[in-house]
Amino acid sequence: MTPRNTICLWYDGSALEAAQFYALTFPDSHVGRVIHAPADFPSGRQGDVLTVEFTVMGIPCLGLNGGPAFRHSEAFSFQVATDDQAETDRLWDAIVGHGGQASACGWCKDRWGLSWQITPRVLTAALADPDRDAARRAFEAMMTMTKIDIAAIEAARAG
Image 1 (cartoon, rainbow, N blue to C red):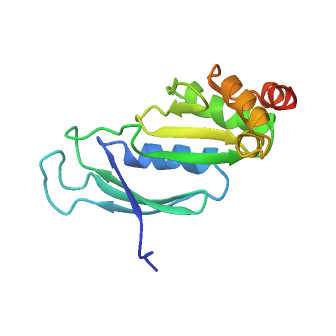
Image 2 (image 1 turned 90 degrees about the horizontal axis):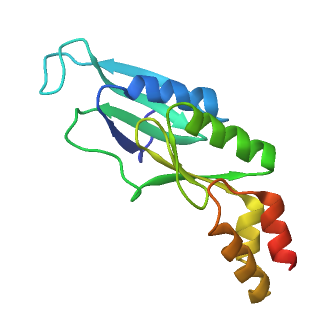
């Protein structure tokens, strides 16, 4: 059954490769139906992969091979809540190490330009701490990081 709401992500011919990477990298992710173009289109030929249905951590997505006209931007990102440093490191390293790019404060881009926030739950809890000084210290620590270091966030929060 097709979901009523699906995130459509635009790719320049690499939607299937991206979907396969996400399915191998993230839990509760898989590649579904692949639809091939029934005729030539502006950025492809009959028989090329046109769309790929996939799920990323339970979120239904559609990869559209629409060509080079549009690129991903930080205006859209997947935010992935992690439970510990090992999970944070594994996901970060998979994205950045597979041709991606590190950014700041837990953000990175995959090789297709899609932005990801690899966000430990400890960070979210620290930023929401009712002790506003603890939250400020954790926030200031985060602002100096690329990949989030949970021990450093916890130390900053504790003071």
